[in-house]
Image 1 (cartoon, rainbow, N blue to C red):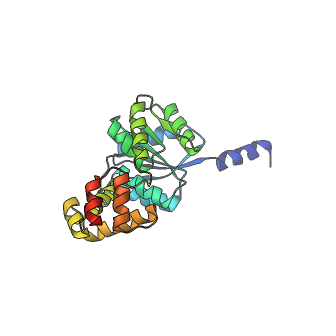
Image 2 (cartoon, one colour):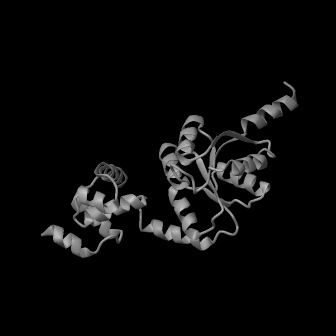
Image 3 (spheres, rainbow, N blue to C red):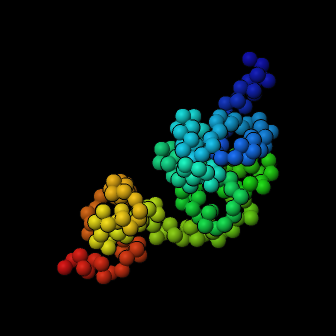
Length: 232
């Protein structure tokens, strides 16, 4: 094999495999056009919603998934959570028109490794993909660092990395509510509450209602009066 052929083979081996997810065809076409300018990027699939993004990620096992936030059936945030549960190694890069701190915080909490605004240039997009694929993080310059700092501060009060819904269920347990009552308050099914409780116990490492209540107190979800009542 000539040096030229050898270099070409190595270049192919090093291609970053990408799944794109956006419900607008024009946006996907624009992303593809920018990424195709780089020889080391390979778009292996395109999804039109969050559920398809999860399925295609499961099928193709890409290095990077690029997600829009607002998508039908399953939004980008929920898709990121599902992808992260199934694949710890896959890197997640959000591409959104919103630079609202709440969106950025929610994306990071869902497992994002980067957050780009849709007005990013081709070189900025490829740099972001390369950074997250290499294990780093990348955020558009216009995104407030305070948004990231606030999210890190919140993480200190959530050492078990519970989701917002799991925190809601934990709070309900600490307040002495039964699964049926928690389900009614949150507008979800009883089985869904049970599923959240099970995942929560797995993250925490077990625990009965009294122990979960104590953890809820430590996290500041409830006041000390709840535990005093349960101890009676």
